[in-house]
Structure formats: structure tokens, C-alpha cells
Length: 317
Picture 1 (cartoon, rainbow, N blue to C red):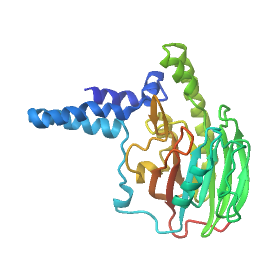
Picture 2 (cartoon, one colour; picture 1 turned 90 degrees about the vertical axis):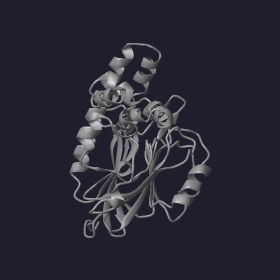
Picture 3 (cartoon, rainbow, N blue to C red; picture 1 turned 60 degrees about the horizontal axis):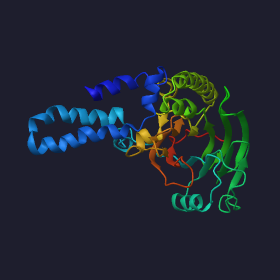
Picture 4 (cartoon, rainbow, N blue to C red; picture 1 turned 120 degrees about the vertical axis):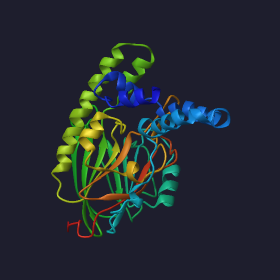
């Protein structure tokens, strides 16, 4: 009953502040109780497995969002066109060594690295090498192995109604790809207030959800006007349980949900572990692989995704 209750509550996340608080909790820990009871029941009371197995499946899957890469096993499979490997991370304005990021770039070999909140004092010798095309604005940094044909800042404040969003046009080998680097409003202030027992925090959380509704709809409107392949990558500050995520981004391929394995937590601190950084694919594209990278000095973990579009889906720049 607890598993079903949590599942039901999460259906109202970002529409009801209490459900929103639950959504940002470390939900994977909920699976520990039925998991432990399964072991006990298997040894001493096997009839209880008829109840515990469904409870465990619900808590691990729909509640805690454990992902299995079904995309490769689906009947239609993944497009065989040109692949684009994207690496995204919110650097959280941390003053950090470039070495962990450079090691990850050397290992993962992405075609595009898109960073939010990259500290202007940070410098990577690797990402400024001649083989990279780069662009930096107030909130975003892009390094691309392919020419950057156009840059358009759409919003410069993550707490503003436009969010912090920059749109890039990339000249990929097979054609043009539009990439959005995304950073939407953080709910941290409201969540911190609730954690301290302050009731005002719920008002703050509701206001943040309403702001992310506006930001997400604006972003979806911009992305919906693009004719051709689209990638939206970055910190949405919105877990997949969110009503916002389901309604606004339901038509896009969520790379980790389709091609990732595990919990996929991207924001990890002492009291939280949640998936709020995403790579979304539009224009008929699909993800063939997606994984979360190691700690590079930010509370956000990098997300790396391989995406592709059908042959002929990419247009000339």
C-alpha cells in the first residue's frame, strides 16, 4: 500500500507542493524496505512474496525511476544515421580543477560538450585546443568538434521567465543540428525551508513550480519551431516524475529513460540524489546509449548520450 500511495502522490508532483517535496527526495531508498523484506520472506515466509514482489517492482520502477535500456531491444530500434555524442553538466560555478573534466572528455570522446554555470576562472586546455569550436556567454559554455554556425541567447537568468537558455546551430557532418543549453529555476530555497520545518517553504516550492511551468513552455515553444534535429541538454531542475516533464516534454526522447541503466542520479549531495539533468532529443531522433559520468567537482554529475536521427533526417546547414 505504501508503494501504491507514493506512486499516486508522485502523479501530482509540480502541481501539489507536498508531492513536489516527495519528488525531490532520495526515492531509491524507498526500495530498501521491500527489498530487505523480500530476502526475509524468501527464507522464512514464501507466501508473502506474492505481495512483496509487486511492491518491490513498483518502488524500484515507477516510484524510484530505475531505468532499463529498452531502446536497443525495441522493434524499430535506433536510427542508423550519423551519431552525435553529447556531454552536458552544470558546473555549479565551482572553482575546480579542469583535470577531471578533461579526463572524462578523453575517455568518453564526446562530439559536443555543453556546460552550464561554468566558472569564468576555470580553464580547460583540452577544450580550447584547435580541434574544438567554442563559445562562452554569461551562463553557458559550448565546445563542439563541428563548426558553430549560429548562437542565440534566449534567456540569461535561471530565475527569470525565460530561464537561462542558449540556442546553437551546429554544422554536423551529415547536416544541421539545433542544440539548446538549458538551466531552469532551482527549487533549493523552498526545499531547504521545508527541511527546516518552515511552512513558508511550501509557498516557495509552489512558486518555483509555476515558474518552471512557464520556463518549460517557453523553451518548448522555441524548440517546436525548429525544423529538423533538436537536442535539449542541461539542468532542467525537474525530475521525470514531474507533471511539467510529462506534459511539456512527453513527445521528446529522454535519453536516459530510453537508453540508460539504473537510477541515473545527476544531482548528488549529502541529503539528496535525484535526476534533474537531461538530454532530450527531438526531430525524430533516438538515443542509443546514455550514462551518468563521475564526479568532476560539481554536485551535478555529467550526462553523456549517443543520439542519432534517421538517414535523410538531417538537413544541409
